[in-house]
Length: 334
Image (cartoon, rainbow, N blue to C red; front, side):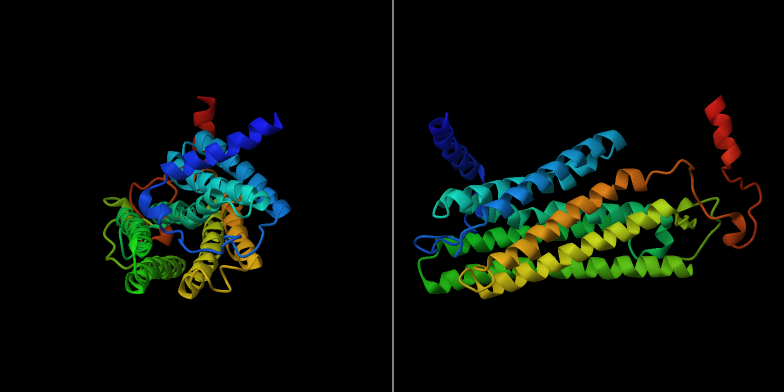
């Protein structure tokens, strides 16, 4: 059985690598250490621990998405978790065979692209918060907000893939440098996008807390976009979770930016502790934070619509009726 397993695992590795998009697979440097691609031997215990925690978190995310009906979590949170599982699964194999090329390519590609769907999840979460708390405090419509930042994120990933393709196909140092620069530009665009997103998120919440609308406020009875939502305990927990995950993604982005700027022969790339703490741990914190602070649970409310009391909007609204707790009780007994 041991011999069968030993021969079967490399076949799985080959199948995964063959199924990877060419632009992503070519991002991996062609020239690596003759005996070890990493410059160190990946720690087996560490890799297995990360793998187990990513598997457990991803399973929980899939369950939570189905339970709360948040189907968008599958192409974001669950997908990001699956990519991390693939990456650390290959990394675990590398701890046994550090000179093998296939698992090195798999873990490099998987850990590179895994944060993208997780960042997209944060974009979607903020879009929902904008709808619930009040679009009047945001410079962009919630839908425009989400589409704009997700599109920028995709463009950044495509640039990284194109740069890797140019570098891999190069036959001289000039084209190799060009490909590296294009890939670096992709990382920079992603970093700038994340920075702008963080700024606008802070601005939105600041304006909401001060009740300073960016748009003129017509009669709230005619346009719900101008009604001020309530910062309930659940929504506050979601805001805290959102900024925690953004901080983790930001730290990871800074690390990747510095690593790529140094190149694949730099100290950052060849030091295992940097990758473990600044990449692996950051992504693990993001996934588990969103397990405990799952948007499907924190952004669902029993009272709908949930708005501030009439006198907090200014003049009392004639004919405006809040949904009271007694109403909910009546519905339950009906």
